[in-house]
Amino acid sequence: MSSLVAEISACRLCAPRFAATATAHEPRPVVWFREGVRPRLLIAGQAPGARVHASGRPFTDPSGDRLRDWTGLSEAEFYDRDKVAIVPMAFCFPGYNAKGADLPPPPLCARTWRARVRAALGPPTLTLLVGGAAIRWHLGLPAMTGAVADWRHWRAQGVFPLPHPSWRTTAWQKRNPWFAAELLPELRAAVRAAIAPEGEDNGADSA
Image 1 (cartoon, rainbow, N blue to C red):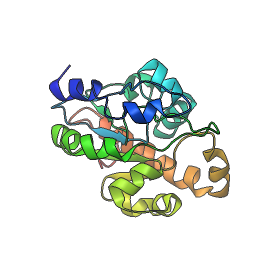
Image 2: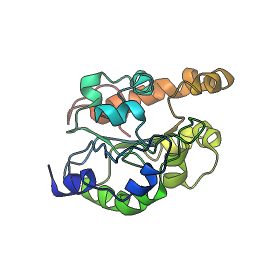
Image 3: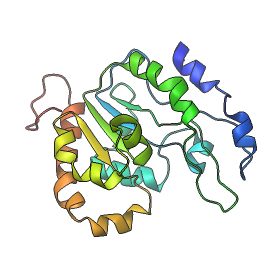
């Protein structure tokens, strides 16, 4: 492992916080990027869930299936660290509260690691901001729906704000049919252009 990947993988800053949750779990940072390799696609998510905590691989859950469908990426393409970097707002599963609800990503993780990761990777060709926490951190916008609705503005800057692809988004999509009808085709074209081999003309504009 590279030095930064090894440092993050060994991080235990949130161990007392996690021990106090209903799950009382140990930290297990899920790190999925190659240091020094500028990603074609950067996926900025929220934080690993319980299934990802167990697997040690990001988006190995129904949310990942939905995100891959949104982007049009195969599993092999999605997990190709020579092209895709998956950098959540927190690298560890935050745990559940006493009612069994997901806890938010601890801000300490982003404060500790995010600037170093961005410096190590360099600017990506295309960035996907997946969920409210990533949208707030990167764009400074409090409302997820407003940011996603303004996707054409952000698309011109090489960014796609997206809702979190959990089952809860099903109702949101029904209320916002433009997401599937208008945004997703543009998202798939932009992702395909971003990960295309250098010099390949695939008919889509690069982000």
